[in-house]
Image (tube, rainbow, N blue to C red; front, side):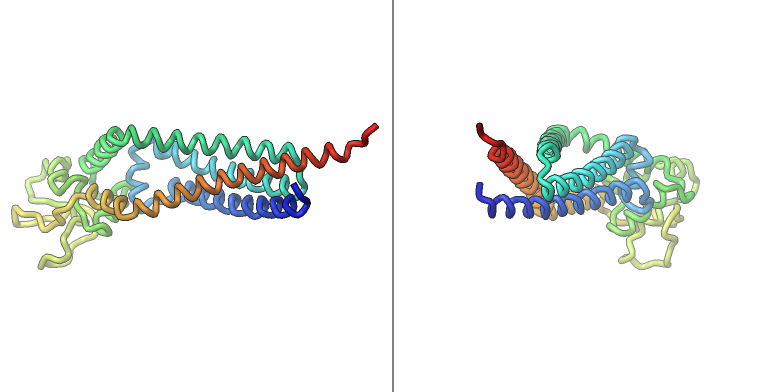
Length: 256
């Protein structure tokens, strides 16, 4: 490989690792958001599923590792340190294998994941009290923002302990359909109605979530494919540079 090609490969790899470092910072930030945020769909799942908390710690770990790899890759590329380039290639290969494995598991276990999520949501609705718990606040925020009620529909709320045992006709305030006439109500907790028909949204939140995923599936797949291509490019560049360093070192050995 010519000296010009080696220099170009070195600086391309440096820029790639800089992007990899920034990507790791984004993953780390997302993991921290999942762990600390208390007003989103993630917060609702987090208090009821230990697997999501574990997932947030994994994201933080992956983000930190990506930042470290990006830093080591930059050092290895600029100073042409062969052991760092080899370590960088190995880590990228392991990450790519882990991503493909995770994608395959999610695809084939999607029905199980959907069932587990439905169980988590139903448990949250049954135990809902409107007493400013993290899950209650987050669930109210979701229903108000997405304009939905319950997980599969408003009928989920009939299993709520307070609504079932109350002598009054109660419904979740955050489900209130703002397009219907009536007085303004609270944004959280349970509200009283005189009509047997609740003035709430008729769509379940699962439909809204699925619609969002379907509408943005192209973007999600594009991001995943882009990440995979970038990782493959990094592996190719690191191997090319590692090979050129190896060859140059041998040419500098004096011949007898």
